[in-house]
Length: 56
Image (cartoon, rainbow, N blue to C red; front, side, top):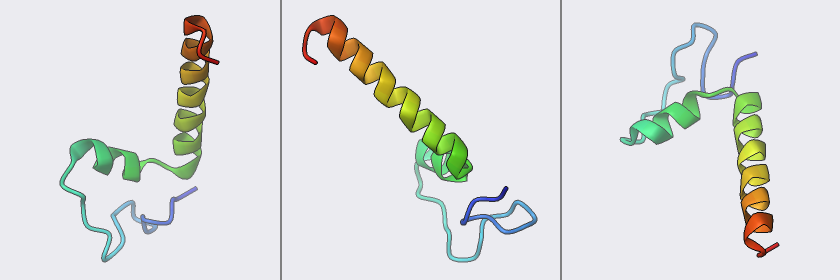
């Protein structure tokens, strides 16, 4: 499966220039499934830390 910003050869599509930030460029290069997994795990981690701190 290929994300929207990448053509079949794995190269960035025309007009999809880098952001200048290596972290943002790596994030944008990830497939949507991996982005969803990373965001979900991040939310679970924040929620768990909040519960331990007594915030949530």
